[in-house]
Length: 67
Image (cartoon, rainbow, N blue to C red; front, side, top):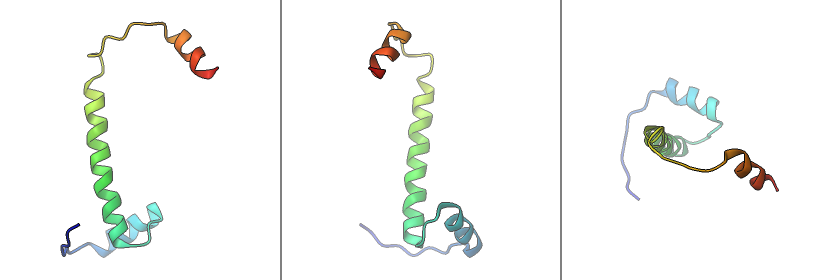
């Protein structure tokens, strides 16, 4: 764990805290950093669209997962 000092836009922080319900600035920054990584991972998954050759019966597969 490292420590750093940053200058934050108080208005932006307040808006983000209201939007997320996150109380502390540290938690808000941690959340934002995790969201950046989540977003990047989603982009990587979307890049796979059309590149994966899946063979099977989706209807059968869905029925099996509901049983």
